[in-house]
Image (cartoon, rainbow, N blue to C red; front, side):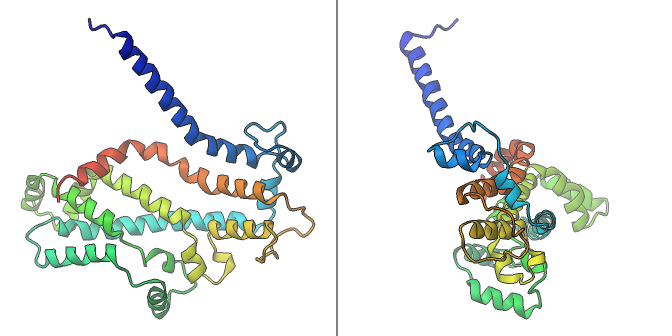
Length: 292
């Protein structure tokens, strides 16, 4: 049986201590934000650093939810995230599957165009003019269609499809299956690790997106929650914003508490999804990035 030397044991102890302190340093900001969001205004002002509040207070959350429009905006965000992710996966799979076949005519030209789009884009104004000319202004389609395919995700998924055994597709086609049937009944089920990974990437992007809604959505009743949370932060700092939906008699808590509560509300829901898809990350991304 192998016996560790004193130096080896000391080195292991040093590694554990160093990695433990490093992990704690990454968790400390999250603990501070979470604790600060539940701290009373008086305690928050009197103490320089709050990691464990002496008294639990919901003043920040009460102010945020003092507008009845917030639950509706949360439902809008959930819809945009779910529908946008479905649109992203649909278009990405439909484009990645034919590009995975080397016999496709014009495949190289299309791939060069995809890579070119990763390096250069039309910019904000041309994109806005395109969205406006298509009549998508003030509709949710303006948040779903412009970024329907991410070039990087497309390339990785295409590489993943290329590594699947060709014999499976050939056998299915010999039995009379068409390309779409092969894609949805054979290729997609075998690619669930990669698809689950990109589902989370797309979902996080839609959940955190707010700038597109500011550009394309004029009706505040259609705003996602990220835009409303931004408005709440602006109002808490005494800035100009849409204050008509808030209770005029409600005392605004310190801006820092409102910011912390906003961060918790905007991050906790999407963080709850990570544990269910985390196991697919390494397998989904690494396998698809091995082969070009």
